[in-house]
Image 1 (cartoon, rainbow, N blue to C red):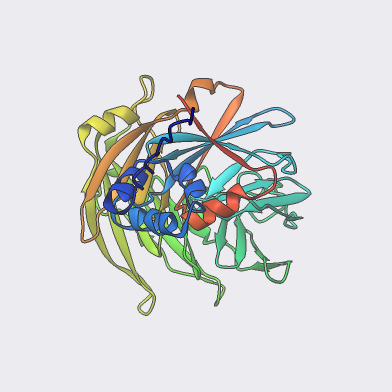
Image 2 (image 1 turned 30 degrees about the vertical axis):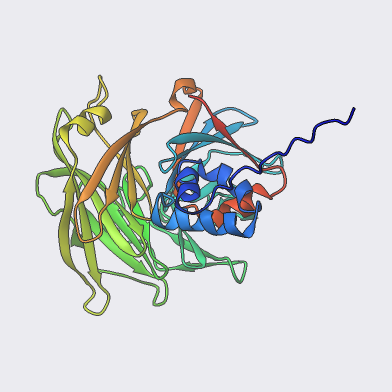
Length: 380
């Protein structure tokens, strides 16, 4: 008996708007695999990212043990997909000293014999160079263009507490330059100073007073002092730079009663050598101010990290919640908060370091192909 022939209908392919809508709901790290399905899928991925659900800057949290061998775990929050991602570190990275950050995605470790630093968006590559000539405890360290500036924080009494040394990444050499302004003698450490950087300038501000200077690497000159307090009731403020826009976030009121948290964009006129405007961008809703308050200390200080159009704001004394401020083109802010997935395992034996990265598909694809680097969506 002849067997019947069964005709199987080929399933209708998914394409066009429907495919783009599906892809817009897929976590960014999982989209990388779909780039290689076909040419049409590759186009659909990029179209979806452009028009439906574009990438947003990741909040990256590094939790480091305070004892040898200083084991570090890294997790990133992707606000586009609203998922946490575990980022496995290559075994070649040796965390020999305390991990620190500045300029949002600039990580560094400083010991008497070595300076280690990383400045690519996902910190895939580390550079290891000789330490500055002067040993420093808690200096400010920042990347300005192709240079690393290490200033203040010296420990030995015979050393200049305002000394500045600059490492050229291109020439692989150190040089000294003019010391920091004398006004900063009692506050020349990262504990008391907030820093921001453009490719040409380093901005330094006292967190409590608002006294601000900039350092021009081309001329090796420090500016005169400016009072960068848009509101005289501001008792604590920090600065950061994103796409060469100087952003200031300040606490208004006092430690026991923070009335407001405000965000300003500060204009810097390099021709006149002054700050020419300070425009209020947004005020944090009370709900999010309360998320930053600790039961014991209220809000005595804040830190920020910035990338793209996002400013992540957190209280170092209460890292369980991070407030996200999205700067709207033309003025204003969108506000939200992120529960810190790393905070559950943080205790007195660990330090937490925050960075931020405006991650693109191409950069993530390179990162996924890097040796010993793994990314995994985790449930928290």
